[in-house]
Image 1 (cartoon, rainbow, N blue to C red):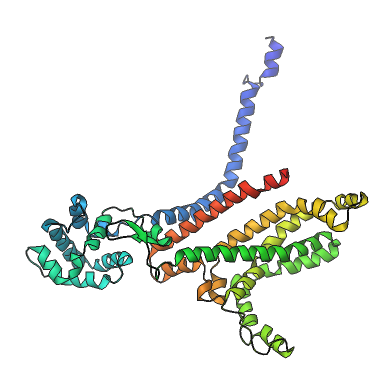
Image 2: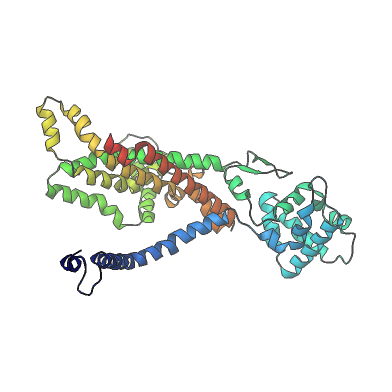
Length: 416
Protein backbone atom coordinates (compact mmCIF):
# COMPACT_ATOMS: atom_id res chain seq x y z
CA UNK A 1 0.00 0.00 0.00
CA UNK A 2 1.38 3.41 -0.96
CA UNK A 3 1.79 6.25 1.57
CA UNK A 4 -0.98 8.10 -0.26
CA UNK A 5 -3.40 5.16 0.24
CA UNK A 6 -2.53 4.97 3.94
CA UNK A 7 -3.21 8.67 4.34
CA UNK A 8 -6.59 8.31 2.61
CA UNK A 9 -7.62 5.25 4.66
CA UNK A 10 -6.71 6.89 7.98
CA UNK A 11 -7.37 10.08 9.88
CA UNK A 12 -4.76 12.80 10.52
CA UNK A 13 -3.94 11.25 13.92
CA UNK A 14 -3.25 7.88 12.31
CA UNK A 15 -6.49 6.14 13.41
CA UNK A 16 -8.05 4.06 10.61
CA UNK A 17 -11.17 5.61 9.12
CA UNK A 18 -13.24 2.46 9.79
CA UNK A 19 -12.55 2.68 13.54
CA UNK A 20 -13.35 6.40 13.55
CA UNK A 21 -16.68 5.71 11.86
CA UNK A 22 -17.45 2.96 14.38
CA UNK A 23 -16.80 5.36 17.26
CA UNK A 24 -19.02 8.02 15.73
CA UNK A 25 -21.79 5.49 15.19
CA UNK A 26 -21.41 4.21 18.77
CA UNK A 27 -21.69 7.75 20.15
CA UNK A 28 -24.75 8.37 18.02
CA UNK A 29 -26.43 5.23 19.35
CA UNK A 30 -25.56 6.17 22.93
CA UNK A 31 -27.12 9.61 22.48
CA UNK A 32 -30.25 8.08 20.99
CA UNK A 33 -30.46 5.58 23.85
CA UNK A 34 -30.04 8.37 26.41
CA UNK A 35 -32.97 10.20 24.84
CA UNK A 36 -35.31 7.21 25.09
CA UNK A 37 -34.00 6.02 28.47
CA UNK A 38 -36.54 8.03 30.56
CA UNK A 39 -39.41 6.57 28.56
CA UNK A 40 -37.93 3.08 28.83
CA UNK A 41 -37.61 3.42 32.61
CA UNK A 42 -41.18 4.69 32.84
CA UNK A 43 -42.46 1.69 30.85
CA UNK A 44 -40.47 -0.75 32.97
CA UNK A 45 -41.60 0.79 36.29
CA UNK A 46 -45.23 1.56 35.42
CA UNK A 47 -45.99 -1.30 33.03
CA UNK A 48 -43.60 -4.26 32.96
CA UNK A 49 -42.96 -4.58 36.71
CA UNK A 50 -46.68 -4.42 37.71
CA UNK A 51 -47.56 -7.00 35.08
CA UNK A 52 -44.73 -9.24 36.23
CA UNK A 53 -45.87 -8.86 39.84
CA UNK A 54 -49.42 -9.73 38.81
CA UNK A 55 -48.31 -12.86 36.95
CA UNK A 56 -46.21 -13.90 39.94
CA UNK A 57 -49.07 -13.40 42.42
CA UNK A 58 -51.30 -15.62 40.30
CA UNK A 59 -49.15 -18.68 41.16
CA UNK A 60 -47.46 -17.64 44.41
CA UNK A 61 -48.98 -17.79 47.88
CA UNK A 62 -46.78 -18.49 50.88
CA UNK A 63 -49.42 -17.88 53.57
CA UNK A 64 -49.58 -21.44 54.88
CA UNK A 65 -45.90 -22.29 54.55
CA UNK A 66 -44.95 -19.04 56.30
CA UNK A 67 -47.58 -19.07 59.08
CA UNK A 68 -47.72 -22.85 59.65
CA UNK A 69 -44.09 -23.94 59.21
CA UNK A 70 -44.26 -26.89 61.63
CA UNK A 71 -47.36 -28.41 60.07
CA UNK A 72 -46.22 -28.05 56.48
CA UNK A 73 -42.84 -29.53 57.37
CA UNK A 74 -44.45 -32.49 59.17
CA UNK A 75 -46.68 -33.18 56.16
CA UNK A 76 -43.76 -33.43 53.75
CA UNK A 77 -43.55 -37.19 54.41
CA UNK A 78 -47.32 -37.80 54.69
CA UNK A 79 -48.59 -40.36 52.17
CA UNK A 80 -52.00 -38.69 51.92
CA UNK A 81 -53.94 -41.95 52.22
CA UNK A 82 -55.16 -41.68 55.82
CA UNK A 83 -55.14 -38.99 58.47
CA UNK A 84 -51.64 -37.89 59.57
CA UNK A 85 -50.02 -39.29 62.68
CA UNK A 86 -49.61 -37.71 66.11
CA UNK A 87 -46.51 -35.75 65.10
CA UNK A 88 -48.42 -33.81 62.47
CA UNK A 89 -51.18 -32.98 64.98
CA UNK A 90 -48.58 -31.87 67.51
CA UNK A 91 -47.06 -29.59 64.86
CA UNK A 92 -50.54 -28.25 64.07
CA UNK A 93 -51.19 -27.50 67.73
CA UNK A 94 -47.89 -25.63 67.95
CA UNK A 95 -48.69 -23.57 64.85
CA UNK A 96 -52.19 -22.74 66.07
CA UNK A 97 -50.83 -21.60 69.44
CA UNK A 98 -48.25 -19.40 67.74
CA UNK A 99 -50.81 -18.00 65.30
CA UNK A 100 -53.17 -17.15 68.16
CA UNK A 101 -50.47 -15.39 70.12
CA UNK A 102 -49.17 -13.49 67.07
CA UNK A 103 -52.69 -12.71 65.81
CA UNK A 104 -52.08 -14.32 62.41
CA UNK A 105 -54.78 -16.96 62.69
CA UNK A 106 -57.12 -14.76 60.65
CA UNK A 107 -54.79 -14.91 57.64
CA UNK A 108 -54.58 -18.71 57.96
CA UNK A 109 -58.35 -19.06 58.15
CA UNK A 110 -58.84 -16.71 55.22
CA UNK A 111 -56.43 -18.65 53.02
CA UNK A 112 -58.03 -21.99 53.89
CA UNK A 113 -61.48 -20.49 53.38
CA UNK A 114 -60.65 -19.81 49.72
CA UNK A 115 -60.58 -23.53 48.99
CA UNK A 116 -62.91 -24.78 51.76
CA UNK A 117 -65.64 -22.18 52.26
CA UNK A 118 -66.87 -21.85 55.82
CA UNK A 119 -63.74 -22.99 57.68
CA UNK A 120 -62.38 -19.56 58.58
CA UNK A 121 -64.35 -19.22 61.80
CA UNK A 122 -63.59 -22.85 62.72
CA UNK A 123 -59.85 -22.25 62.36
CA UNK A 124 -60.08 -19.18 64.58
CA UNK A 125 -62.04 -20.97 67.29
CA UNK A 126 -59.68 -23.96 67.10
CA UNK A 127 -56.65 -21.72 67.57
CA UNK A 128 -58.27 -20.06 70.58
CA UNK A 129 -59.01 -23.41 72.23
CA UNK A 130 -55.69 -24.97 71.21
CA UNK A 131 -53.84 -22.18 73.00
CA UNK A 132 -54.98 -23.74 76.29
CA UNK A 133 -53.60 -27.21 75.46
CA UNK A 134 -50.54 -28.03 77.54
CA UNK A 135 -49.72 -31.61 76.50
CA UNK A 136 -50.74 -34.38 74.12
CA UNK A 137 -52.03 -36.56 72.75
CA UNK A 138 -52.97 -33.78 70.30
CA UNK A 139 -54.78 -35.81 67.64
CA UNK A 140 -57.79 -36.70 69.75
CA UNK A 141 -57.74 -33.30 71.46
CA UNK A 142 -57.82 -31.27 68.23
CA UNK A 143 -60.51 -33.43 66.64
CA UNK A 144 -62.54 -33.05 69.83
CA UNK A 145 -62.04 -29.28 69.74
CA UNK A 146 -63.33 -29.20 66.16
CA UNK A 147 -64.16 -32.11 63.80
CA UNK A 148 -62.58 -29.96 61.05
CA UNK A 149 -59.20 -31.50 61.86
CA UNK A 150 -60.54 -34.98 61.20
CA UNK A 151 -61.39 -34.16 57.60
CA UNK A 152 -59.02 -35.57 55.01
CA UNK A 153 -59.44 -32.65 52.57
CA UNK A 154 -58.24 -30.19 55.23
CA UNK A 155 -54.94 -32.02 55.53
CA UNK A 156 -54.48 -32.30 51.76
CA UNK A 157 -55.01 -28.54 51.62
CA UNK A 158 -52.33 -28.03 54.27
CA UNK A 159 -49.98 -30.34 52.39
CA UNK A 160 -50.47 -28.31 49.19
CA UNK A 161 -49.69 -25.25 51.30
CA UNK A 162 -46.22 -26.61 52.01
CA UNK A 163 -45.21 -25.11 48.67
CA UNK A 164 -45.21 -21.35 48.10
CA UNK A 165 -46.44 -21.96 44.55
CA UNK A 166 -50.03 -22.96 43.84
CA UNK A 167 -52.24 -23.53 40.86
CA UNK A 168 -55.44 -22.92 42.81
CA UNK A 169 -56.05 -19.36 41.62
CA UNK A 170 -55.53 -20.16 37.95
CA UNK A 171 -57.72 -23.27 38.23
CA UNK A 172 -60.45 -21.31 40.01
CA UNK A 173 -60.33 -18.65 37.28
CA UNK A 174 -61.39 -21.26 34.70
CA UNK A 175 -63.95 -22.93 37.00
CA UNK A 176 -61.79 -25.80 38.25
CA UNK A 177 -60.51 -26.56 41.73
CA UNK A 178 -58.70 -29.17 43.80
CA UNK A 179 -60.72 -32.13 45.03
CA UNK A 180 -60.45 -33.94 48.40
CA UNK A 181 -57.38 -35.87 47.22
CA UNK A 182 -55.77 -32.89 45.45
CA UNK A 183 -57.09 -34.03 42.09
CA UNK A 184 -58.33 -31.35 39.67
CA UNK A 185 -62.13 -31.34 39.40
CA UNK A 186 -64.75 -29.01 37.98
CA UNK A 187 -66.13 -26.38 40.33
CA UNK A 188 -69.73 -26.79 41.56
CA UNK A 189 -72.30 -25.19 39.20
CA UNK A 190 -73.12 -22.47 41.73
CA UNK A 191 -69.46 -21.40 41.77
CA UNK A 192 -68.70 -21.87 38.07
CA UNK A 193 -69.03 -18.28 36.87
CA UNK A 194 -65.73 -17.33 35.28
CA UNK A 195 -65.89 -19.19 31.99
CA UNK A 196 -69.21 -17.50 31.25
CA UNK A 197 -67.65 -14.20 32.30
CA UNK A 198 -64.77 -14.59 29.86
CA UNK A 199 -67.17 -15.56 27.06
CA UNK A 200 -69.36 -12.56 27.93
CA UNK A 201 -66.33 -10.28 27.83
CA UNK A 202 -65.39 -11.60 24.39
CA UNK A 203 -68.94 -11.33 23.02
CA UNK A 204 -69.42 -7.75 24.26
CA UNK A 205 -66.02 -6.72 22.90
CA UNK A 206 -66.77 -8.26 19.49
CA UNK A 207 -70.23 -6.63 19.38
CA UNK A 208 -68.82 -3.20 20.20
CA UNK A 209 -66.02 -3.64 17.64
CA UNK A 210 -68.50 -4.54 14.90
CA UNK A 211 -70.80 -1.65 15.86
CA UNK A 212 -67.99 0.89 15.80
CA UNK A 213 -66.83 -0.41 12.40
CA UNK A 214 -70.33 -0.14 10.88
CA UNK A 215 -70.76 3.38 12.25
CA UNK A 216 -67.20 4.60 11.83
CA UNK A 217 -66.43 3.46 8.28
CA UNK A 218 -69.00 5.71 6.52
CA UNK A 219 -68.00 8.69 8.68
CA UNK A 220 -64.31 8.10 7.95
CA UNK A 221 -65.10 7.91 4.22
CA UNK A 222 -67.05 11.15 4.44
CA UNK A 223 -64.23 12.90 6.29
CA UNK A 224 -61.68 11.66 3.72
CA UNK A 225 -63.67 12.85 0.70
CA UNK A 226 -65.07 16.19 1.91
CA UNK A 227 -63.23 19.47 1.29
CA UNK A 228 -60.74 20.34 4.06
CA UNK A 229 -62.90 23.12 5.49
CA UNK A 230 -65.89 20.85 6.08
CA UNK A 231 -63.86 17.80 7.08
CA UNK A 232 -61.92 19.77 9.70
CA UNK A 233 -65.16 20.87 11.34
CA UNK A 234 -66.49 17.32 11.40
CA UNK A 235 -63.15 16.04 12.73
CA UNK A 236 -63.45 18.39 15.69
CA UNK A 237 -66.86 16.87 16.45
CA UNK A 238 -65.37 13.36 16.22
CA UNK A 239 -62.53 14.02 18.66
CA UNK A 240 -64.61 16.22 20.98
CA UNK A 241 -65.49 13.26 23.28
CA UNK A 242 -61.78 12.90 24.07
CA UNK A 243 -62.01 16.15 26.01
CA UNK A 244 -64.26 14.54 28.63
CA UNK A 245 -63.55 11.53 30.84
CA UNK A 246 -65.04 8.08 30.35
CA UNK A 247 -66.93 8.46 33.62
CA UNK A 248 -68.65 11.66 32.44
CA UNK A 249 -69.61 10.12 29.10
CA UNK A 250 -70.96 7.00 30.79
CA UNK A 251 -72.96 9.08 33.27
CA UNK A 252 -74.43 11.01 30.34
CA UNK A 253 -75.71 7.75 28.90
CA UNK A 254 -77.29 6.90 32.25
CA UNK A 255 -79.25 10.17 32.00
CA UNK A 256 -80.25 9.44 28.42
CA UNK A 257 -81.18 5.77 28.78
CA UNK A 258 -82.87 5.60 32.18
CA UNK A 259 -86.56 4.79 32.50
CA UNK A 260 -87.65 8.44 32.52
CA UNK A 261 -84.63 9.67 30.60
CA UNK A 262 -84.46 11.84 27.53
CA UNK A 263 -84.75 9.05 24.95
CA UNK A 264 -87.75 7.36 26.56
CA UNK A 265 -89.54 10.69 27.09
CA UNK A 266 -89.06 11.72 23.46
CA UNK A 267 -90.21 8.36 22.13
CA UNK A 268 -93.30 8.45 24.33
CA UNK A 269 -94.19 12.01 23.34
CA UNK A 270 -93.88 11.01 19.70
CA UNK A 271 -96.25 8.10 20.49
CA UNK A 272 -93.68 5.59 19.27
CA UNK A 273 -93.76 3.89 22.69
CA UNK A 274 -96.68 3.58 25.07
CA UNK A 275 -94.45 2.85 28.09
CA UNK A 276 -90.76 3.35 28.84
CA UNK A 277 -88.43 0.82 27.25
CA UNK A 278 -85.70 -0.94 29.23
CA UNK A 279 -82.65 0.72 27.74
CA UNK A 280 -80.33 0.62 30.73
CA UNK A 281 -78.96 -1.96 33.15
CA UNK A 282 -78.89 -4.52 30.36
CA UNK A 283 -76.71 -5.64 27.45
CA UNK A 284 -78.18 -3.06 25.07
CA UNK A 285 -77.24 -0.11 27.26
CA UNK A 286 -73.73 -1.53 27.79
CA UNK A 287 -73.06 -1.95 24.08
CA UNK A 288 -74.53 1.47 23.17
CA UNK A 289 -72.44 3.33 25.76
CA UNK A 290 -69.25 1.43 24.95
CA UNK A 291 -69.77 1.96 21.21
CA UNK A 292 -70.05 5.71 21.72
CA UNK A 293 -66.83 5.77 23.75
CA UNK A 294 -64.86 3.53 21.39
CA UNK A 295 -66.08 4.97 18.08
CA UNK A 296 -63.17 7.42 17.60
CA UNK A 297 -60.62 4.67 18.26
CA UNK A 298 -61.98 2.71 15.28
CA UNK A 299 -62.70 5.69 13.06
CA UNK A 300 -59.38 7.55 13.22
CA UNK A 301 -57.08 4.72 11.96
CA UNK A 302 -59.49 4.09 9.08
CA UNK A 303 -59.57 7.79 8.25
CA UNK A 304 -55.77 8.07 8.31
CA UNK A 305 -55.50 5.26 5.74
CA UNK A 306 -58.29 6.65 3.55
CA UNK A 307 -56.53 10.00 3.32
CA UNK A 308 -53.59 8.30 1.62
CA UNK A 309 -55.75 6.66 -1.09
CA UNK A 310 -55.72 8.60 -4.35
CA UNK A 311 -59.21 9.29 -5.77
CA UNK A 312 -57.73 8.85 -9.25
CA UNK A 313 -57.74 5.08 -8.73
CA UNK A 314 -61.52 4.93 -8.48
CA UNK A 315 -61.86 7.35 -11.42
CA UNK A 316 -59.63 5.12 -13.50
CA UNK A 317 -61.75 2.08 -12.62
CA UNK A 318 -64.92 3.98 -13.57
CA UNK A 319 -63.38 5.08 -16.87
CA UNK A 320 -62.63 1.44 -17.67
CA UNK A 321 -66.29 0.50 -17.28
CA UNK A 322 -66.65 -0.44 -13.62
CA UNK A 323 -69.84 0.58 -11.84
CA UNK A 324 -69.79 2.77 -8.70
CA UNK A 325 -70.16 -0.11 -6.26
CA UNK A 326 -67.78 -2.41 -8.14
CA UNK A 327 -65.11 0.27 -8.33
CA UNK A 328 -65.49 0.99 -4.63
CA UNK A 329 -65.48 -2.65 -3.56
CA UNK A 330 -62.64 -3.87 -5.78
CA UNK A 331 -60.39 -0.82 -5.87
CA UNK A 332 -61.04 1.45 -2.89
CA UNK A 333 -62.15 -0.89 -0.09
CA UNK A 334 -59.15 -3.31 -0.19
CA UNK A 335 -56.81 -0.37 0.38
CA UNK A 336 -58.69 0.56 3.58
CA UNK A 337 -58.18 -2.88 5.16
CA UNK A 338 -54.98 -1.94 7.05
CA UNK A 339 -56.90 0.91 8.75
CA UNK A 340 -59.86 -1.34 9.47
CA UNK A 341 -57.58 -3.97 10.98
CA UNK A 342 -55.74 -1.45 13.16
CA UNK A 343 -58.91 0.32 14.35
CA UNK A 344 -60.84 -2.87 15.12
CA UNK A 345 -57.90 -4.45 16.94
CA UNK A 346 -57.40 -1.32 19.04
CA UNK A 347 -61.08 -1.14 19.95
CA UNK A 348 -61.33 -4.86 20.71
CA UNK A 349 -58.32 -4.85 23.04
CA UNK A 350 -59.56 -1.74 24.87
CA UNK A 351 -63.02 -3.27 25.30
CA UNK A 352 -61.61 -6.37 26.96
CA UNK A 353 -60.54 -4.27 29.96
CA UNK A 354 -63.69 -2.17 30.40
CA UNK A 355 -64.93 -1.72 33.96
CA UNK A 356 -66.67 1.64 34.59
CA UNK A 357 -69.17 1.55 31.72
CA UNK A 358 -70.56 -1.99 32.33
CA UNK A 359 -70.66 -1.27 36.07
CA UNK A 360 -72.82 1.84 35.58
CA UNK A 361 -75.10 0.98 32.65
CA UNK A 362 -74.99 -2.83 32.68
CA UNK A 363 -76.95 -5.32 34.74
CA UNK A 364 -75.68 -8.17 36.93
CA UNK A 365 -75.34 -10.45 33.88
CA UNK A 366 -73.42 -7.83 31.87
CA UNK A 367 -70.34 -7.46 34.07
CA UNK A 368 -67.01 -8.23 32.45
CA UNK A 369 -63.78 -9.72 33.79
CA UNK A 370 -62.54 -6.34 35.04
CA UNK A 371 -65.48 -6.16 37.45
CA UNK A 372 -64.33 -9.32 39.22
CA UNK A 373 -60.72 -8.17 39.23
CA UNK A 374 -61.83 -4.98 41.01
CA UNK A 375 -64.07 -7.00 43.35
CA UNK A 376 -61.27 -9.31 44.48
CA UNK A 377 -58.84 -6.41 44.76
CA UNK A 378 -60.99 -3.89 46.65
CA UNK A 379 -63.56 -5.98 48.55
CA UNK A 380 -62.31 -9.53 49.13
CA UNK A 381 -58.65 -8.47 49.21
CA UNK A 382 -57.89 -11.71 47.38
CA UNK A 383 -54.90 -10.64 45.32
CA UNK A 384 -54.29 -14.16 44.08
CA UNK A 385 -57.67 -14.41 42.33
CA UNK A 386 -57.42 -10.85 40.99
CA UNK A 387 -53.97 -11.59 39.59
CA UNK A 388 -55.08 -14.90 38.08
CA UNK A 389 -58.06 -13.34 36.31
CA UNK A 390 -55.87 -10.54 35.04
CA UNK A 391 -53.20 -12.98 33.89
CA UNK A 392 -55.70 -15.11 31.97
CA UNK A 393 -57.22 -12.01 30.35
CA UNK A 394 -53.76 -10.76 29.39
CA UNK A 395 -52.81 -14.16 27.97
CA UNK A 396 -56.05 -14.38 25.99
CA UNK A 397 -55.46 -10.88 24.61
CA UNK A 398 -51.92 -11.73 23.50
CA UNK A 399 -53.05 -14.99 21.89
CA UNK A 400 -55.87 -13.24 20.04
CA UNK A 401 -53.46 -10.55 18.88
CA UNK A 402 -51.01 -13.18 17.69
CA UNK A 403 -53.74 -15.11 15.85
CA UNK A 404 -55.03 -11.86 14.33
CA UNK A 405 -51.57 -11.00 12.98
CA UNK A 406 -51.14 -14.51 11.59
CA UNK A 407 -54.54 -14.68 9.92
CA UNK A 408 -55.41 -11.12 8.89
CA UNK A 409 -52.35 -9.10 9.84
CA UNK A 410 -51.55 -5.85 8.10
CA UNK A 411 -48.69 -7.44 6.13
CA UNK A 412 -50.99 -10.14 4.81
CA UNK A 413 -53.61 -7.52 3.93
CA UNK A 414 -51.06 -5.55 1.95
CA UNK A 415 -49.84 -8.69 0.17
CA UNK A 416 -53.43 -9.61 -0.64
